[in-house]
Each structure stands twice: as structure tokens, then as C-alpha cells.
Amino acid sequence: MIERKFDTLVQQLKSRVLAEVARDYWDGTLEEKKRFIPKMISPGPKSTMRCCIYKERAIVTDRIYLALGGDKNNPNLLEVIEAACDSCPFGGMTVTDMCRGCLAHRCEQACRLNAISFGSDLRCIIDKNKCVNCGLCAKACQFGAIVDKKRPCEAACKINAIHPREDGITEIDNSKCVQCGQCSYACPFGAIMDKSFITKCIDILKGSDGGRNYKTYIIVAPSICSQFHYAKLGQVVTGMHRLGFTNVLEAALGADLVAYNEAGNLAEEGSCTSSCCPAFVKYAKNNYPTLKDKISHNLSPMAAIARHVKRMDPTCKTVFVGPCIAKKNEMFRPDSAPFVDCVITFEELEAMFDAKSIVLNVLEETELDNASYFGRIFARSGGLSEAVAQALKERGSDFEVKPVKVSGLDQCRSALNQMKTGRLPGNFIEGMACPGGCIGGPACLTHEVRDAADVDRYGKTSSAPTITDAINGIHGDATIASNADLPNE
Image 1: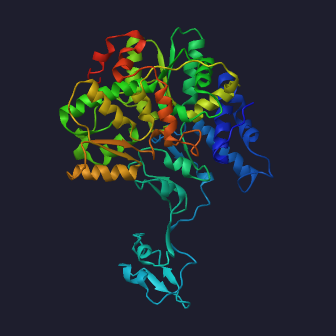
Image 2: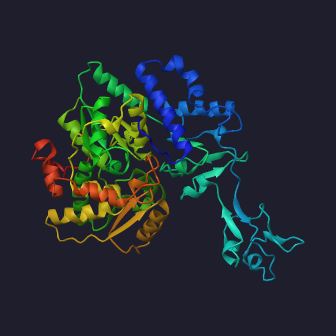
């Protein structure tokens, strides 16, 4: 058995639910066992994480529901497990014990809404009915005695898409949410979880095994290099074959295609933003409609390589695996849906290994070598910009890319504001919704170890010295380089 270290008990519980659902769905016993799974997974009465074992089981039942796809009427990939969301304070500007009851009262002078008064001990009191959490009082206090105590999910959401209802339960504003998923990892109670398509993936594999005569391709995100620390990458590739996938391809090869295209677009248009991160693209389109034409019209690396695979083998099925929750939306986008049949996360892939009792670190290694160094470094912030600069050179262009590399939606907002007002100190925004890029994705197996150096080391193992070499090397088809310039369907 592999000894794995989970970041939190919440992550461990989610993993156990996914693995149990996958195991029983594969065996065809899920329906008859579904009501027993919460008892099998929940800890005993003495070790429950909740007030009682019955609430624990109710929450596990909700997790099973989300593992099976969740609420079909809710378009958001993220859902709040209400039974789990009951222990966070409302938050907002809060006076701490650091308040000394000073005479200066700078906090009172800074407040424009008269929300601050003082008790008999001269300590600051904030009227929550008047306070709008502007933070001016906190900035004014010389002792740092006033802090903004947000719920962890609210603090993680940089676009204010999360707020508490009147009853205290967290609510997600679907009109603002871009499904980056940072809130799901930040919640210490595991009260926000993404919908899973793990059963859809299993159906694809079972159909292939059942004689439907199609090949199954799994397309792995380049951030896989920073995931399975208890096994070698080649062993993980072998494990995917053991699950039943016919071929394993790198999304980084799609990144090579995208970099080649994006370089051409940039040289032609003079300035643009990247298209690789679906959460960034959705945020830009929702909040900066005047910049819509500046957003690259290229497919994402996932969809770009899936499109190529479908052209080569129209009957095949494609599954993408990565650290991203927002990627699941691309299954339904008109520009990607014809090419991508299913999207799962690294958490779900690991659960499938567990469901099939596949022990990775004892397997032989299978080489994964489809992409260039530059396609692989898309996994970290700055990698796309380097790839575009390289692609410009390979295309023989003298256009100089001046990238503005941003990760995290707060940084993305700042860069887009600068572009909107004509103050951007560059001509290309590389936008990533997750801090640090894809290696900071919400469905990573570990958030404690996400070293960009892992990505660079992985990139340097590529046998393709250039982007063009990688593109021309797709299944030995020397015509693909010209296909890279084809418009997206």
C-alpha cells in the first residue's frame, strides 16, 4: 500500500468518497450499496469531525450526490454542502484585544459612516448595521487592532462571488463566479465541493472494454509533474493504461499548438490576452466586455490537442485530467464540446487508481514524451509568455512580446483594468486564475508542495528541442505545423 499525505482531513474524506463511488460504479453495485457508503466512509463516533456521527453521514451523503454529478439544474460546477457550512462567523471589520482605548481615536475620524463609537473602557465598538467593511478604520489604527475577518471561502474569492445568507450559510453568486474553485480548497469544513464526472469517465472506459470498438485517449495537464510525489511519472502513465486508456497524450502538446497560434495572433493584432485559463477568460468576458476582441480566440491546449486527436480518429473518446475545476465547463462550450468527451481532476484520477487497487509505485514505467519544453512550462505562471516568445522566433517574426504575467484573479483584475484604460505596460496579458498558475489549481493532490522548479525540470526532459519539432512530431505527421494555423472551428 502507498502511504499518502493529504493536506487536510477534508481532502482525505473527499478522496475516500470518490474512490468508493468509483469502485461500486465500476462493479455495477453502486445503487444497491449507495445507502451504506456513508456508514462505511464516516469515522467512528469518537473521531467524527462533526457534532455527531449522524450529521457526518448526512454530509457524506451530500458528497456522494456531488460525486455523481450534483444538481443538474444548477449550472455552477461548485455547490455548497449546507449541512457542512455552519461554524464560520459572519466576519467583517472586527475589533481585537489589541485595542488600547487610545485618545487619538483615528479609527473614528477615518469612518465616514459614523459606525464607530467607544465603550466605558474607551475601547472601539463597530456598529455592524452601519459598517460597509471599507477598511479605512483598520488602516488608520496604529495598533493594528481592527482586522477584516472574512470567512476562508470569502477571503479566497477575489471577485466577491461568495457571501453568507441571512441564516449564515454560504451562498455562491453564479452571475459573478468563474468557477476557479479556490473557495473549495480554502473551506476548512469542506462545505464547497465541485461536481464530479468520474462516472462519465468510467462509462467511457467500460464502453471501450465492452467491445464498442473505439480508442480512449487521456490528455494529461503538464502540472501532472508536480502531483504524484509517491510515484514516478512513468508509473502514473502505466497506471492510466491499467485503467483502460488506450493512449496517454500531453496537453502540453496542445500548448505547443496554442503558443504557435497565439504568437501569430499577437504579431498580427499588436496586443491580446491569453486563452488557456477558462476561469480567466470567463472573468474577462463577464467584467470587461470592451476587451472581448482582445481575448485570444484560440482553443485552450486541452481542446487544441483533443481536436487534433478527433481529426485523426473521429470515433475515439477523449478525457482530460488536470488540477482545474473550471476546465469541466469546456465540455459544454460550443467551441470545445465536439472534441472533449469528459474532464476529470487529479483528485478523481487518484480515486480511480484506488478504486481499481492500482499501486503506482510498484509499476513499470511508460515514457510520456509528446511535447516540447515550452509546452510543458505552461503549468506555471510565466510559462505561456516564454512559449509565445519562442514561437515568434520560430516563425521568423521580429515582433517583440512584452508580457504582463499575472496569476490570481486579483492580479488579473489589475492587468485588465490597465489594458482597458490604455496603461498596460506591455502588449500581452498572460492571465491565470490560480496563484502561481495551474500548479496552484484547486484540485491538485497537494497544495503544500507546488514548486515551479518541478515544472522546469519536467520540461527539460523533453526530446523535442523546439515547438515546431513537437508539432511536426505528432504521430509522425509532418503536416501538423501548417494545421496549427487553421482557424478554430
